[in-house]
Length: 152
Image 1 (cartoon, rainbow, N blue to C red):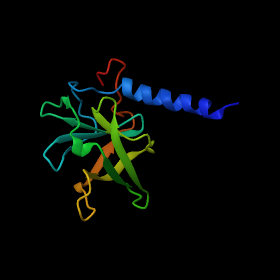
Image 2 (cartoon, rainbow, N blue to C red; image 1 turned 180 degrees about the vertical axis):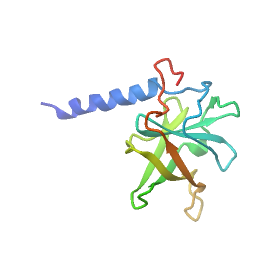
Image 3 (cartoon, rainbow, N blue to C red; image 1 turned 30 degrees about the vertical axis):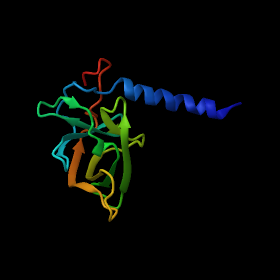
């Protein structure tokens, strides 16, 4: 029995499902998640969808825009509240058509964290731009999921 084929199918299906039911450029985001300003002034929305962090770029009307290149590799450092000893470092990479960045890592509930985002390429000192430590909290029932028609 070829286990690699059996195990590959669910992973491929999950990737397709996440891509198909995601907000696309031009869609309007609801108020779920945390709104942030990037170092370049880009308005961002960090949310959890299907127990995975997802980062969108948006305009002032909350319409999804293409993710600027500086956000194509984001390191998300989290610290669980109230247990600060439970930390994670999560790599967010572009997904879908480049409309958002996400990670396949599943996030444990409850969704209550301190988050710091490290963005862009490292400078000559090995440091990245960052979005300072901010409290992120999202109700479990409100995972920011997308409806089948992509309307969220």
